[in-house]
Image 1 (tube, rainbow, N blue to C red):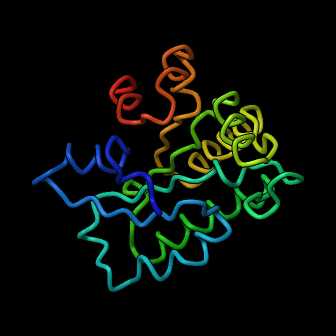
Image 2: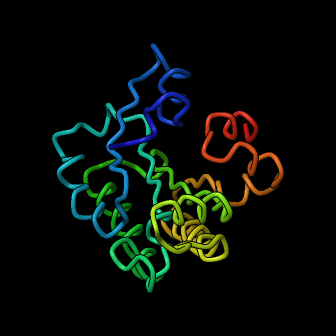
Amino acid sequence: FQYSFQEHGWGAYLAERLVRKCDVVNRGISGYNTRWAKLILPRLITESTGADSIAAVTIFFGANDSALKELNPKQHVPLEEYAANLKGMVQYLKSVDITADKIILITPPPLQESAWEKACLAKGDKLNRCNATTGQYAQACVQVAKECGTDVLDLWSLMQKNQVRWNQEYLKLPRVVKCIT
């Protein structure tokens, strides 16, 4: 189940803001990491998709990739592989004629550790992510964007500029996006 198109999700917010301007099509799958997304990307966007009809493609991964290996080995992707996977996805998009100016990488958002730990403990699990590690993945995403010539939305840094506010509004991305823009 994908959360971005739920009420108050960032996908729903974008669709509302862009109504009658363009269609917002979400191909995200909750729980995926870059390793899995890289494999399915060619089935989601093909040469026949028509690059001219695409206004923008966002690549928004890193939260699951940055899960701690020893506590969440299923979702964890090593940092170097994460960066390589992002580059591979950008290269694939370019190979189907989607230009770099239409590709936007989005860093993982910061992790509100105390809230995440409560959620983990409620399921009988230990805290399996930490904000410092997520920050390393965010930095890698920014670097990949620079190397590939794409734009990047550095949510990890932007959301932490006002740490009190993002902690209070954790997971309410439309409000955070309004604050950032």
